[in-house]
Length: 168
Length: 360
Length: 107
Image 1 (cartoon, rainbow over the protein chains, first blue to last red):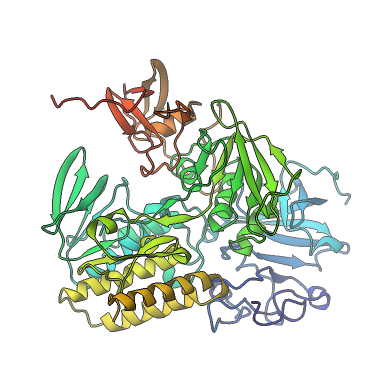
Image 2: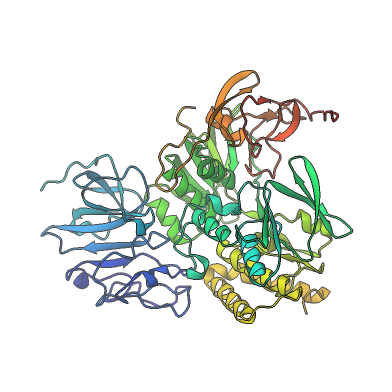
């Protein structure tokens, strides 16, 4: 049972389409199964994650309101929210992802960028690590990845990359 | 309150709020039950502490009643049985004491299921809850490489926690053709690189004195092993997360009418909407009332606590409102596709209850 | 097994109790006061806690919360102690138990 549509990329729903991503950072909520959960709505101060009529409904983002601030990333108990910024640099996008492992990487580190099945798909450079108290021990790691991989890389492995350091 | 886990603590809070005197008895050395090893952030809504970690929820619940003169905690204390004169026997430090409660809320939780396979008794074959206790409460890794059996929420969550503790998880095997737990929990371990092998089971665990390896086999649609699909994993630990069953010994001994409801995990007590069993004055809540999530256990505890206190004549201006809110939240938690099994189980339980007159 | 103790963890902090010494079948081991005996043994690399009464197969713990009785040992002469919940104290004498154990008469 997958109630409403909106799994397809668009300006509403969970997955922002290419046109929206080209306009600036935005949340990508990879939550595709109805479970009773709603903290992401409370986390968004811009009202971009719509209120839940039913706590089991899938989250729905208004990508015209979402500015990719990332306040929802560490709040999601499913660690299912990422922020993608394809306007970061010419050929590089930034992916911000939740991270609950040690050691934490440091800015400047080269790490392995992993896809949803844990396969290494690129070398990534860490640009920032957020670990404020309000995040309650869910760090948010910002990594630079090749732009075509912005919707593929969803995890990292610290300690360098087998694919080798990316140039630039 | 027998059991001071999420259900028992919430029952205690609710009953205290109504003006009842409460004693919480628990065999553990700290309140919180299984919450004390849940390091992940909880689902649900704000009322059930969504977004907070289980380990912190235990403290938050206990803090609400810890220093209340109306509430007494008896920890390291095991309830051993009900006596004919209405007293319950409690073992503490090898001594037996007796306590009489006008109402009793039983919230003893669950025990882990076993799975039959050669070598399942070897040291190193551990229940998922045991692995959590050892690792998250006492800071000891269960081993170096683990095979997880079961891809329900517990198997997925404990796999993630093993990775966080620096333990390798070689694979998660699941006999069903699909993952039983939440998709988001599965994704957390898949992106680290842990394979989830659905339609697979553990065929045997090998070792002379302790676990040294395990053989996994693929299952056909008839759940029979498919020949020549065996795969060997070099592991020192096999973790069983193949379900829970209500820890109902006390209810049996008390003579509560029980029913076998597979959707609720096994034998559960027939009970009314207020969670009172067929034995007047004995209430149930949490996993004992039917295997579910901690969030629903908390609400069931609240309903049982409110109802038990009210039946003693205690009153509170917000009683009706609190009860209605709790019922609505519980219904919402169960209303999604993942709640279907529990909904079916409760329907069956209530139907059986009506047949024997436990439910009006 | 070295390194069984978790020293750093992304979510948890472990406050170690006082270090105490105890014996396991005569061998001197160390653990932390107040932790379950089974945790101290496991951290010291001991997984086999006893044997099954009939077939003499090795036994370890299973549930770790005092429910299943897979971890019965003799502690300070007392048989059938569930070491998964029994707290470790300085100088404890922990022994593998053969058979079902014999209850001692009260002093």
